[in-house]
Amino acid sequence: MPNTPSPTNPIATSAKLADGREIWFFDEEPTLRSVHDERPLEPRAGGSQLRWDRLTATWTAVAGHRQTRTFKPPSDECPLCPSTDGRLTEIPAESYDVVSFENRFPSLSTASVMAATGEPFVSRPGYGRCEVVCFTSDHEQSFVDLPPERVRTVIAALAHRTEQLSAMPDIAYVFCFENRGEEIGVTLQHPHGQIYAMPVLPPRIESLVNAADAHREATGECLQCEVLADEVADGSRVVAENASFVAYVPYAGRWPYEIRVVPRRHVGSLPGLTSDEMGDLAALYQECLQRMDGLDDAGPVPYIAGWQQAPTGREDTWHLAAEIFTIRRAPGRLKYLAGIESGVAFWINDIPPETAAERLRAVRV
Image 1 (cartoon, rainbow, N blue to C red):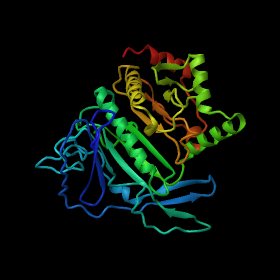
Image 2 (image 1 turned 45 degrees about the vertical axis):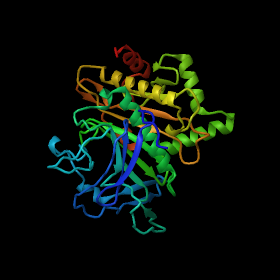
Image 3 (image 1 turned 90 degrees about the vertical axis):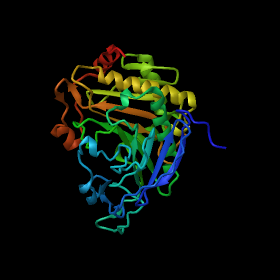
Image 4 (image 1 turned 180 degrees about the horizontal axis):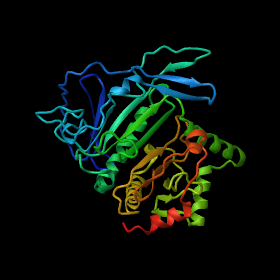
């Protein structure tokens, strides 16, 4: 029996684009989907490679084919808008609610065929998957302005894709994220995010894993649960909360304004949330974005938002969190990474986290 559609339980329909890439439609209402991509596309690119840096013990992706990706097209040439009779886009449909599809210019791909190499210069194929998630068919909207039911649909879509991508062979981590604003480096203005299914743990996640494992080994408890309890008890950095989630500025936050959104219940990833928790997350997450935008009158803030989900196989020991931060430290002033930060990753924050939290709480939403 087909599921009853709703923002937290949308109907998911899969199809293929002209070059074989997969596309998923997430519809809030019953919609008859008959998808035909009529574009004469070249075979999809897949020439990326992972190279091992012996000095830092980390992987770097090399993907030369991405130099030809779409760069700041005018709105009437946006590849993420619905297709029309006169112009075919990446979305072969006249309208949609939420869509996720394989990136045409991926950093990682199941089609990567480069051979692995051994010592002294170690490499492996850039295996994985990169997807683009379109939050709405409306080119002029922003995530912060979406109707609440659409925010829930987006989160449900991310949960769906996380569950499926995590089940792919040799995937170690699935990272869902959104970039907003040209200052961040956004080259497509249509409201969208991305998902990377990766064959290795990215360095920051590996660092979080190591800290969590060390704490669990020493105490038998979840580090994130403990930090959340301490932040709630202290209260000075809590920005907002509801029945299921708490949003706070981290005690050692690196960015001028940085918010961490954490579930009260110990749950590893988006697919593990209940329907009520998903609704609470949608409400609090959107409120955090509204508070960011309300900090000053300089217009929408540029931000990066990412979901720190459980690495593959670690659902029981991981604690989900969303991280939102902006590089704007004041109207007309951005935080550029200085030499000490870019060079050796020693962070210096110009705004005390307690001050940031106070200013965020003061925003009327």
